[in-house]
Image (tube, rainbow, N blue to C red; front, top):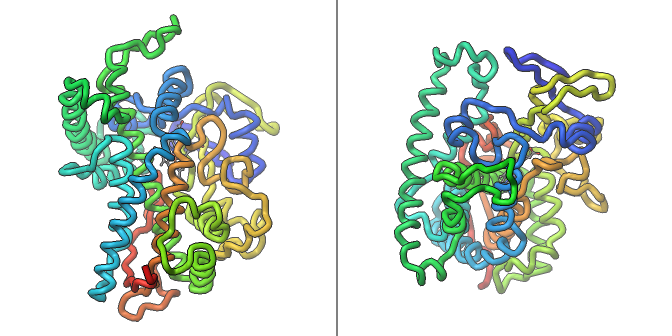
Length: 438
Ligand code: HEM
């Protein structure tokens, strides 16, 4: 579908076949991102990775982040952090269960993912810094329909008040990042400390004032503090909310579908038993859990329109002319609910649809691309998936869950809050009961 958003031609991709054409066959033409006001403010002039135009700068930042933070070995290296943080969540929930309390599961899961990611990215616990509220506002602003992006001459009037919010938000984020970098710089003066605790921020700081790519004569950009802050912010923004949102939606669907919750608990009992807690090494054996997560990501994709792409040249696809600098929105939310793609029960939460099916979520099966696909596909998929799998396995294995005040499963509110990501509009409130013997 082609629409015009103000001055910007936009294409909405809503079928697996079209998605394949845009994200695979012609991926290189659509591998750029549009310059939007939010990323100009929040990403220090699009100097991060997620909103940077396609080219050598993006390629190098993506390489750094993959190598130093998101590679399989890095994800593996941080397994003890995940274990410690998630066990501490289980202990907190156990106490709440003993006291018969209702817990705000959205908040608890959000905090635990924030702690894990904070330690991975910044090498320490978050202490006094609370980035989560500013990140939530950031994601909302990046996803908001901002008139200034489509009718630029209206930008000075700030009719929606978004520019004012962007300025406040970017100032708040900048102050926190400055403090974190200052702390790291002070510790880096001590070489022993530097060797012992070399984290992602330290790696980034070691590149400060150096050329981006010394071997590339064309690309002599020198790494400045703003580049580092923008990259850090991208990592934090991409990591904090995504995994937590996926866990929240899956728990909500499990509460609405006691049959699926029961089946999942049965699988966990068969594989793990009731005398010990789930370990990361159990995850490959939990096939029903994988189906449940796939089904949840199908109906509640974390990024319902992926992250917007922009075409880098004029192109004709299937006889349709698409001009350079068109905006491409891939409507994976719509595709997930299309009966032509998923049969008549497309709207139903039914994990068994993935049984004996080869449909994978890694970006090769275009009817189901919760992590996007192609060059700009999610580089944090492995990390995101391990966070989500482990958190869910622990929550479902350790506790029985009830909705508060006798609420029926069918009464649970499933409203969405639209932004770049799609979290629940309202927090998930639930009553846990501990069920293990360990
Ligand atoms: C359940 C968890 C997650 C989901 C569902 C998810 C989903 C996505 C999606 C749909 C995109 C857009 C892809 C496209 O345009 O084709 C994306 C991009 C991205 N994701 Fe994730 N993500 C998750 C976790 C993470 C984590 C933990 C990180 C780690 C920092 C991360 C980092 C990124 C980055 C940096 C990009 C932009 C890539 C680029 O523009 O080159 N994501 N993600």
